[in-house]
Length: 459
Ligand code: HEM
Image (cartoon, rainbow, N blue to C red; front, top):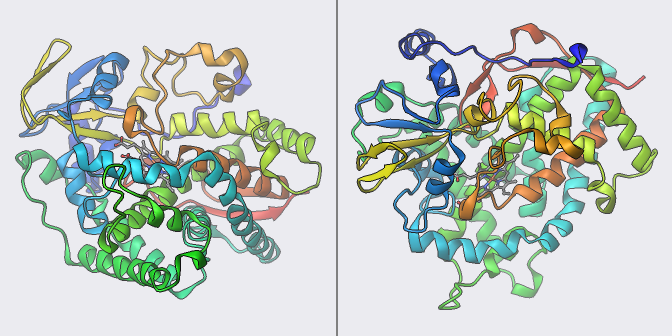
């Protein structure tokens, strides 16, 4: 239907040179505006502006073979691991080979379905506290940053479910503020490095980033020490304790203090920015288009009436989940899933050199003309009923795929459904300058400028 053809904001792609000049001119290192128009059409192709070879992979058979590679030929890309290393060491998100296998086996139980079910109480408490805050904001009518609001809310969820503490605590505040510095400075892709650096070269970090990482790691160390000082029977029943109890499947040995700090840093990093990014776009889109908000609210009322949003019925919010999934199709929080070839190899018709960067971009794949009809149009029906058959199998990967698929996928889906249901049934969100909103790739897919919003009690 014509009225439903809503194309939310994007930066139209240019030629390779045009995209490069645009990005250099803006000086923000946005990899999305660098992506040439051809990237959205080819199954595999070079992104030709770099000293090292960079290839984009869009064909499901090709990117699947890289992401499921059993021989460890394509580990995480060195530019990304170098940028994250000061914060998260050699932890789950960045490690590879046998070290990664050991860590994954020790951490998977902490994100089992049972554990996520148990975490729901912490999610509810964070959302209830946030609803109170929104109610106050609705009374004053003061504008606020939607980006900051979503980061704050999802960081509070992480604090409560992983560490059994709220974001209001002094330690959590320290981590949150230092993380904002890390996000602004380390995430910034330095274009000269991408263009001129040789593969596997060392990545010097700015002092501000190193200081922020040290502060975050100190604060996490305080949390770990406080827990290690208690008899194990008194550890809180949360995800951090589950990770602390994790044992190496061969030796039975647990994580060291340093390893625990690495892993908990990853949960904070990977666990709140991503969900915040998805929710920013959900709330933005729904504020622009009542035709998607209406059925979502009807579904929440049909399921819960005015009662509490409980865990056991959450999975029946199929339209709500479809809105979340479609928002992540158009704005996948992890814009790029980069890998590096550690030996010469072959992908399709291409010879791959050692050191070549392989870009698997959920952003590009989710908007690829060969995979999705009307790729830029927002249509939650793609994820309900027969709509699932409308796109090419294997081309939806906001949580990655293969053995390194996101450990927090279930957690994030439940958290987002709860937040959407609870906030949207009580409040209307008004965006102050919707026409100026544009996405860009930072650490996650974010608005280029923060989105200013106002909230009103639902009439
Ligand atoms: C909407 C929210 C989220 C999105 C879109 C997302 C996306 C992803 C993606 C694409 C990957 C794979 C990266 C790659 O292969 O290079 C990943 C991995 C990971 N995610 Fe998430 N994530 C989300 C939420 C979470 C949450 C809530 C947590 C934990 C609390 C989490 C923890 C992790 C970890 C630890 C990994 C590394 C797994 C491994 O390499 O074995 N994520 N995530």
